[in-house]
View 1 (cartoon, one colour):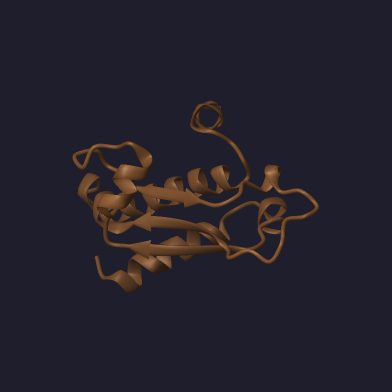
View 2 (cartoon, helix red, strand yellow; view 1 turned 45 degrees about the vertical axis):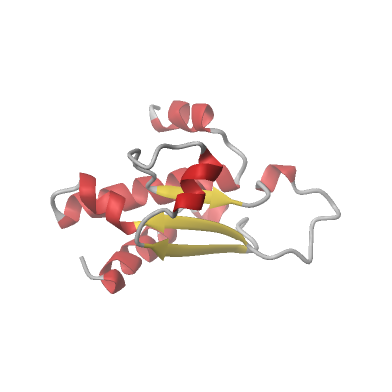
Length: 122
């Protein structure tokens, strides 16, 4: 899939977030990269053979206190190649992008993987 089309899917997923969450998002950049770097695998403790589809890096919203400010934006990175590797159609890619974006936004709000799995299974 062309990068421009993939980025559009990420934008659409962000636009589909419930308004009550979108309104609370501040100081956040969402970027698309081809695949995770070696440093990402080292930082997350993952194997280079594992699939990392997205990554949140920053100070979770629920941990920001009154002195939070003058910081670079938190970053959510969505990795295009791993997502394409596990999807066969554009519709599957769109669904997976939405799922990954929502998952990483969950990390932005301070949910850990266990909590997100519980929420996703509701």
